[in-house]
Length: 602
Image (tube, rainbow, N blue to C red; front, side, top):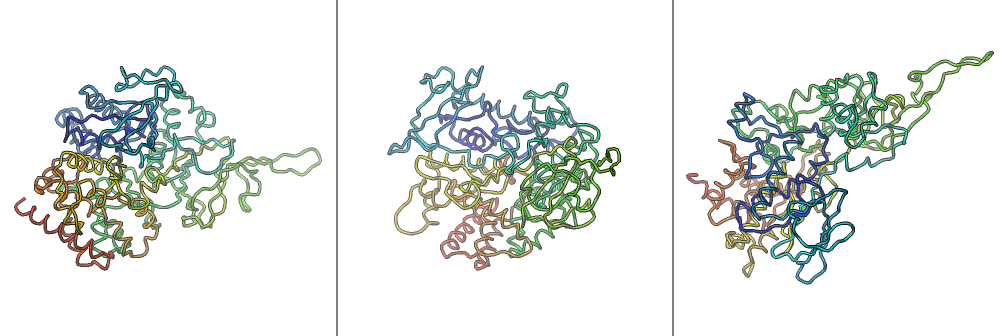
């Protein structure tokens, strides 16, 4: 892979050990992973300040930015074009230095070739017409296979799988439910090319879907309320000039959203970070309701409707200005998840109401009969997660089907993809190893989002393992028992992923307190960050300085306070609250002792 995860990992790895040689194999034509297929009006939800790679500012030169825009770069949010250019420049630099050989448009068999040493892997180019190969592949001799060259690689150090958290997005992932072919379904990409493409024609011709029904009275039905759905509502209203009355917003599950600029953002550095949630959850003994209420009162959390209690936390970020645009849409449907979109004859499906746009027709001597109109109808999963209400009807309903308008006058916008919550069990459902074996890693998030921060930490740990600077002695103290473990063995046992999908599922039951293993899962990022500092080097103060100097880490924000040691002490005091084993309690006590010593005079 060559997406955000892979590039943040490789960047730190090469910063720490510049002499390494890395082969990057990616199915996309350019670096950047899912950003290549993202809708063109997308911007980062969080600020550019802490996204990308550790060695290169995404927001660019601060002085030049301020002279050009007359504002601080801390407010910069990169768009798709800026992000792809940033990553492309980065990879070209590595290739030019001879540190990386880069193979785009290529597929790798991640299972390997079955050799005893787990060191042989095979990949092949997927050549499209006119493809000339990537900058890392020129001059290499490989056998022709399936229209492109095939390569066998013997891995000296490690095979690194950076694709586990590959986001599922609308352009590449169709809706997971049946849709009548007569219904116009568009992605956010299609909206952009319809509105901003030359003559309403896109590079791929897909905007014809929209232009065939688009008009001043077109109704837009936005399916999904995650980052993509929110962006789409804002784009429709702000850029396309669509009246909020012409938009229907299908909200399967209301979500808690982080406020991009909470009150006191400038005077309290780091306020509003995902760590606020984990810290407060531990502080208040797993009382999720209390934590959500407190953080909402402080302006850290926002929601679509103050009368509807959210049931999901997916770490989306928004500004109050954007939220006002979203709230201007009054046709909000909360009937659970859509299970089918079909076309129906619209004379009886309005439950006693007259059909929309019905016309009277009659033959001579006959009584006038309404002409049936074909309408787009959404049906919903029985027992779905929604509250069963739809505000524009003035009442409440269970999960009954809903007609949203005539076939020729409705555009359904597909925003139902789960993004990084991609259903990959290894990626998000449960704790699992990242350092899989001597020859293999599978990159995974170990802290709260964004993902780049976790990947930089993993890159440092792998570099420290390889050059022998891990604190192996302390790792063996943490694990106890007889015998001396290697640095690799210590990382395999101690460094695990943050089970983000499980956390999201737990938040569905937001009306109850949690404890035991569930609470331990939610606060795991605190332990992982502390483990990183304690294991990364025998010089713990040096590790704290490294974190402070890493632009992806919240600790790089002046005067930021993490409360991590305070949180570790709470875990020990309330060990029964998080079902802490004797072994884990011992590990945490050792980390507290080491961190307090390092923080003295820091």
